[in-house]
Image 1 (tube, helix red, strand yellow):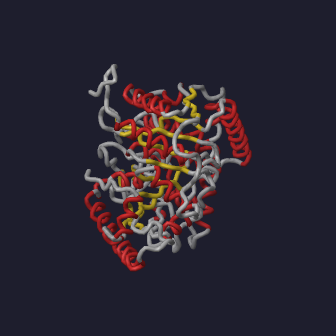
Image 2 (tube, rainbow, N blue to C red):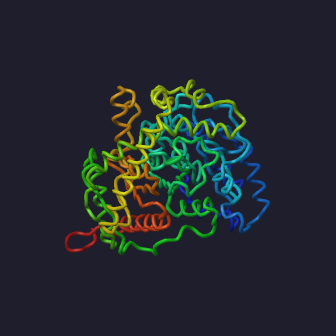
Image 3 (cartoon, rainbow, N blue to C red):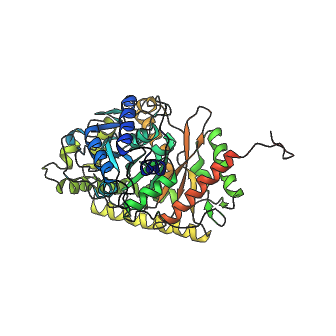
Length: 474
């Protein structure tokens, strides 16, 4: 794959010390995009505009207000980015060109980042495969015969292939964390509301958030600090190390369907955390958790999606509304979904779903309090990236696989909790999988600090020499 594996910090340092330039970084990304075009990670690329921005930044020199100078980014195609269309991966919006950046894009550009292009996605962000009927199926850079995940599949593929250093995605249910896990990346969703979502084609205003896909937790922390408008001060939280951290690892449902290889790898990772001082509490979730979460998700989407898209379109100079977009949906799976969403759901059903969401929140907050937990640790998904054919075999097989891939992130996304998927190794076929940390809302700083400690602990454990039972090096 020949991926560029440099981190955000390494790129910034190289540009700052003069061993690279912003133009050089853009050239590297443009060449990589050409090499990996078969992945169909992008819907639009504008290398000329990227080079123009890079030249201006090179002439600026090192300045404290440009902490991201040299970082080349990709942006999911449902986030407004001046100079590009915001298509949301759907035909009706292919010529929709908002004049202004969404806030998350604007602050990153103001900090010196350069946007190479907009990334492919599952149409309207309503799916897990990023098999887009208009722009093509996003290939997984690790194994191109497997899906990259969705809906932010193009963003994940662009980072994993080394085309860009980091990317923005969005997440309603699993759309950042799933592709991160399937492509071997870090995927972070903040607490809902922590990042501004104006300029984003919204699926659910109670669940949607912009998220970050990158190679390391430190990369996420740097971008997170800028998006939160506190550059130079990555989210603070716990000090280094895991001693005293308490994480629940509920067994039955979260691990259902895991292959023996993934189960063994997951258990091994938890054991390493315990060796480092964390306490892993194996306690089932409260009775009724899954039943309650099942009553929240779809009714909320039924009500919010059509209204959210209308709200987005109404802020732009367009006469289009959700029913116009829905009428031209290209993907058969998304067409099936939007037929149900077009009705918009009833006020009573929506109110009932919000009540169930509040009940779910009480259940899980009580669970954390009762066990004195910082958060929950689960496999991001119980299976590695499947082949696209799995989704084409039958409607029943499609939705069964969809639910399997999205299951472990479902409750946390309904509640708007911050969560992060960390790379957790590969199975016997070389396919990546991820481990997901889910913390209560507003604890993003603590989550990122614990995630960084987990990442470092696993990395250090991988460097240890293997020994026999007597402790002798093998």
